[in-house]
Amino acid sequence: MKIHLVAICGTGMGSLAGLLKTAGHDVRGSDKAFYPPMSERLQAWGIPALQGFDAKHIDPDTDMVIVGNACRKDNPEAIAAQEKGLIIKSFPQALSELFISQKRSVVIAGTHGKTTTSSLLSFLLVEAQRDPSFLVGGILQNYGKSFRLGKGPEFIVEGDEYDSAFFDKRPKFLHYQPNIAVLTSVEFDHADIYDDMHAYRSAYRSFVDLLPRDGLLVACIDDHEVSNLLPGANCQVIKYGLTDEADWQAQAMVPSRDGVVFELVVDKKPAGKVRIPLGGDHNVANTLATLVVANQLGLAPPESAALLAGFSGVARRMQVRGISSGVTVIDDFAHHPTEVRSTVQAVRNSYPDANLVAVFEPRTNTSRRKFFQDEYPDSFGGADRVVIVPPFNSSQIPEADLFDSAKLADDLVKRGQAAVCLTAVDQVVKDLTKSVPAGGVILVMSNGAFDNIHEKLLSGLKEREGTRK
Image (cartoon, rainbow, N blue to C red; front, side, top):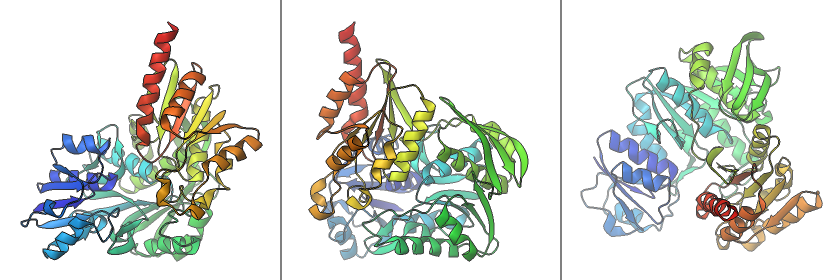
């Protein structure tokens, strides 16, 4: 088929484009902006990508148009596709109908940890030669891509609770027909589409209801909202976590710069030692979920544990972008207060003696709003200094709803923590390349390109080193 993707440079849409290309389709797309890593991936995969949205981009012989959820109903390409009477589908609808429906669907859902958990499971099944298919929300560094089309029976997909398209406001994960589901956490997010916690919770309740009686729900019992959803499940439930209520539990965790070692306990019985090349309690929990599902699919814990050591991580998830002038620059996708707290603490555990500076850009639709204004000050406790910038594209948010970055900096200072609000990336780079000592760590948290701050920091630090010589 000849398929055109509108808003192709998004993480999910770009991955779907690659999957479609691999399946033999004629694929192309368009977007208003192109930025790494997806722009580079599309070029490497040989997928034509047109700049901007224009009705002329939709060829009359196009068989299907897939519209990303970033598009509004007035998008000229969406309008042109409708006027031409072409088949139009949302990203999750196309993914489900063309790929997932033919496989055993393994859906990783939850407010936090979806990308890492789905990536870990995908990696395990590939390395165990199970030949799985997958599509996840980040690029697996082992393979350089976020998707795979295999001949094995499983399709692993990251189940996003965000809406599907302007013409389909259902959460994406309701399209994925789960046979096995992981539920990592349920904590309010996406304030732009969910009115309140009740609406957000209801979406997850609908997801749990999709599981068939012969299915499996793997649930993090440490999460209060998740545990409250379990009585409504009509299938087998396996609980994992760090507390004694868990069927699969992690104990005796020992962090280091190389990751974490923990003792696995299954049904109250020791099941061996597990070493993961990831930091933080949250990644221990993500690993537990992965081990449970892998076991269900035929990989015993010792086999999975042996393979885990080879996992190289996911791009933009506590990814070390480089070390320059003795300073380590780390890139992370964290944006929700809980994610920020977990990431800062994980980096602190890995670098206990380093001068740690946390840099935060409010960029998601929720973090740019003041919904979590009072929660964020508790999230940076592990950092020696915090640098915040104003919300991305702040003019898009009504002033009454806009997150106040300067107030966050002031609140942190009142708590006795060094913090500052700087208005531009170049200011941040100038400040940090002068102030962070050798041996320090700069943790950058944003869900977007952030004006290429990571490379600018590494370049500035390199220049500093040359000047000092």
